[in-house]
Image: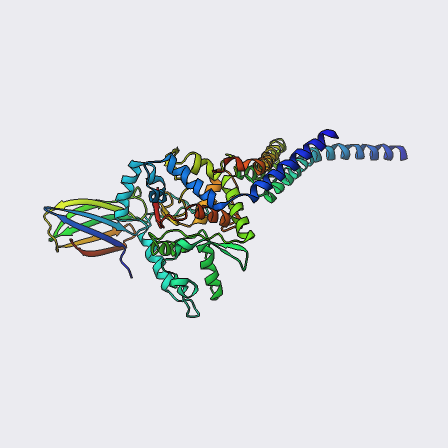
Length: 103
Length: 280
Length: 104
């Protein structure tokens, strides 16, 4: 099954810029369906990016983040060819992870 | 009695004038005038850029869009569409069997006028015709699956220039004219026509949105709207536009909707496919 | 005995008559108003010019009538009819006028 995570990490000198797109419904738990019933909350709670054994970025998400969330950040200390691990866990305990190479 | 006769007479004359005007309409001339209206009004916009809708009208929006395009939200729908397109039907045939070039890089030819049925056929209708010809149930014209399929087909056709044919057939001409009439007719309690927003107010704001110009407005379809959080078909956009001006929408892919898509696509001939588009 | 029975019968009929008049009046008035509104609404649909607000007002009128609020229901039905008529007038006017906006 295809990963829910798309990531692109581009090294530019000392700084690596990371963009990611994660496929997830991010249901807040406040929206009603066409029958008038609440769609239960189903959203990512933690997203982590790891490089060289260290966590370089952590996001704590909740109901305010929209569907299929996009994320962009930069960090120092990576080089082209290094591995970057992305992982997420949601409120239902579901998770996914992906290892990408810094370009 | 005399007044009634005069009124009826006036209506008859009016109708005759309207009929006369209809017969002397030259779509090629109209398309040229349509294009000139927008290029004259927006001299800083390059012709091809009109297909980018609001982004051709607003620099701030364009910057945000360029960033979004680095990692477009419609990727998931395009991938889903690609998978759907490649998956055979129960009878073993695929979508590719129904289309020229196996269905790759053909978005710019739709809609077309079908002389056999005397109807305008849009890409969405053609896809469902393909399904039904192969024993499959048709997809909802406003649902995610049709949006994913058409998103993939648009994606494979990016950059190709629209080439909508208007054959020398009075029925095709009538479809064009009905589409033109639909486009310029005010409707709904808010009394807007499509032209009210996309001609008169192109580039202006409606609440927080910047209005796309009508020139090339079909080129980016289907569109991923951030407002929807999903990919949506032409039918989805047309029906919601109708509701938003408080007009009860027609059925998706109603003859009039296909006619207006035909008219607008013809007006955008020569412009490049830019779909699937990302919009606010 | 016969006279008393007659008087009693007349009284019974009079009472029944009064009761019927009190119940039938507003409901009949509503039904008439709703029928007119619905007819105009159907014409708007046939002309492909139906407004969403017409549909909403008609539904509200029926809901009020079902709750026994006949005065309100009649007012809503009349409003729905006015909206439907306006949408029909819009379509007729646009049939003649739409060409004025065409880019030439």
